[in-house]
Length: 271
Image (spheres, helix red, strand yellow):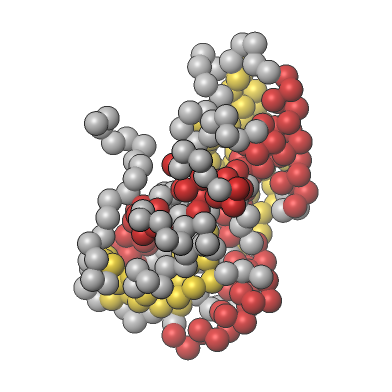
């Protein structure tokens, strides 16, 4: 499998992320894509576009963060390109990986299957949107931590029927999975895991459902696999939560609550 991601200064990162954070994140977001297909990442190529007079120290920090991520995920950087940018910094990383079994697609969810999510949805969004975000939220924004072993374990053991990563928020990504699978879904809003940094906030549910940048796994699984999934998650130290079920009816909804709109869309008309 091959995946590509682009990080654009002013869109995906700003001064809250150091050069090292951007270097880490450039690889981690693509590793998250590989995880979602049940693949081990193996190689990467990098393209950088930088404005004239750009800070050499930032670039050194970027290289250090990227090196750290490459070592963490056992990925080889095999090439790339560097060009001049007339404006912001552009970082594009293409990642190749090898599925450990049949690739896990978005199209395998069936009515009656459970809806699962990993991690703490909304935490990174709090880091991006809050005027004074708590340190845990900033850490989630700066350094996503996809777990390759958990994702490939799900695929190797045949525990999931469909999977994707959550990058644009549950409100955007769950409907995409449902459309690909030809099903709908109902989510229990009280079941969505809330990190302590989100607990008690009036905008908790909006952040959990509508904010992006989580890079956690969203997957479908038969109910008979619940114990095996929980055991694998515990063995990897992954927080995995069952938050709903897939349905025959094609709509996607929160149980008893209106499904909110995403907080961000790349090509939405300016308000």
